[in-house]
Image (tube, rainbow, N blue to C red; front, top):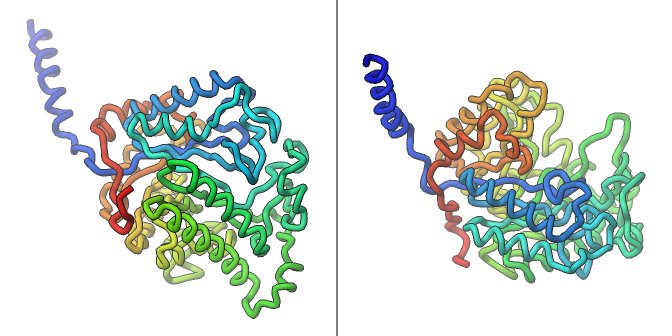
Length: 404
């Protein structure tokens, strides 16, 4: 009898406990990256069957919608190739197994992916890599009409990859034309770029642009010249997007640290060995100040209390450097599968969400990456569905953009 009363009391309290939890925001960006390079998320490696590709994409969308997401950021141009019929670049090897080979039976994956996302009330952000042209020079499939073959003078080899020379004006215009084509032909909600501008440094190797720097006869220092090159293409892309569709957003997902405080008093309280400004030559703060971009999604992939780039410290820094633009925090949920004590803690992600919601200048989250949710890491799918994203949220409005 006592046990029955106790159970009844517990069951009575459970709903009250749920009701006591803070209600999730009614307006919040909740996105997921779907990476196609090297078949990280979609399509699965070796999955060249069209029906299987469609089924798998829909499965992932439905999983994310059930988790409360309202946007997907899908990589449609991973390495100067295309997940759509492009007049500029060949079909991606990660779609059909061989670069330049069209899907059979034919379909337009980008059109399909946009329509399926919109059916579910989700925004579709077309994720493009600006400079990577050959993912791996030793084994990548490269079509005869790939731009690295038709204009080899536009490219620089660094490590195992080929990159567009960021200083080459013709290469810049080519990339802008690729983006212009996507915006013009497809009903996307945003163009999105990640952290690969000048490539991450390779120990013992110098990026081979000394000849280009000398030819430029620039009065700028080499680091400032590099930053100027990246500034130019970001501004050009921004102008191109807004000229075609003023309502289409432009977002960047940079490495977590702009600059460390020990080299710049305006930098963050971090001790990172890499920074956007000094190593990737991406002056993300300038782009926000100039309003060339609409949102930033810094990749805060380390945990709360990390000894060099603590989540809570870098979150606070970004919250103070929005310049009126939106901030969506990038969460590294893939780390739940690594041998890392902090990321085995089921409270790590919930605590990150609770922290970012304390800042009015932070409008939401993006998760890397899609397939990391497949096995419900640390029960986080359940946490999102039953608590943090238990009620739907509208995408935050960007007041400076016109209605679609």
